[in-house]
Image (tube, rainbow, N blue to C red):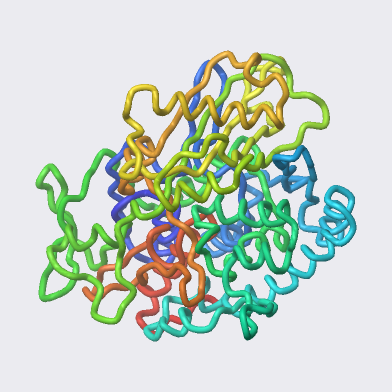
Length: 496
């Protein structure tokens, strides 16, 4: 196993239970991939995902690898409201967790009669897109005839007049403009795509499944921080006798009789294996010296075509005020600014910023302080020079200015801050430019990642850059698919 990301560890635990001897070679000194933690002076911060959707993926992992509920290892807390949204015109709305009726009522009250109904109708259509794509896109290996997933748009968009005829909604921006018909609702929708690193200006309408997942299955916080989930998966691997070797960089995948036969490390040490599982499909070719995806397959693309993230960890003086919500989304004053980061690699003046304020004593030194994390989607390090003097701090200042719309007096409370850019992501995960993988989306112009199996027998790809894409739940699904393909062979068709 090359790399100790969440998908790789999920595969390792499942393979170990199936009787395989598994060794994981990780070039850094820790596990978890992008699920990291920064600690200083009694403050603790999640620098990767701050919340968990689809916890059923990890519940399944723990049941299948030990007949033990996930909740025996970590405490899951349903976040309510799922998020508060602050718009440029000063409008605010808090959306209840996993309650369509509650969301409809909240939007009607905040945005005006009819807004909630339009969003509710949108969620009904989003559910149809989810039902059409859930299994083939998330729970099964990528089909050899994957072109089926890139065929008809699965979102049942409405039609509208255009010139002399009618056109069906097939793009996310059309959903906002034609179906939601309120710039704030459109920004609400765009924000979900932006958080996943998907361009709202070009995304297919099937990206509607992203807000649907949160509304249907809830948004969850892992008490102690999401890093605790990585700790739990790592410990499960260790209990199943998975061996981890940290500080071990794989420089070559060995081949024997046309199949993967092991790895060579930077120290020239060699480890033989019956199967090799790697992360980052577009790097596997360099490690093998050959094409690992055949003609007609979904091929790997350079990772830095996707954006990255800036994360600002804030150590604050003063207690968290009563009634503060866990997550606030502060929407950009100019939504064109967010789109420019995709079009031209430009930074928005006041970016859409996620403000995470967990009410968790484990993350702060005492009750008179608070730890806050700000997150914004930005160009990768190959699109923008994050190493330029002052670049990171200047953008962190913009994020703090945006966040102050949600936390009045924020900047006066700051004791210190830690700014993490795509350069940190690149160092920790190896992703080119510090890019973050988006989830797979079925549509003619959707997002599909390379299959978990490759053209080289015995070589498999796992994690966010392979099928079914990025995000904590998707990484767990990727691990399950790889384990199934190795244990059951090419006839494996996914969990039943």
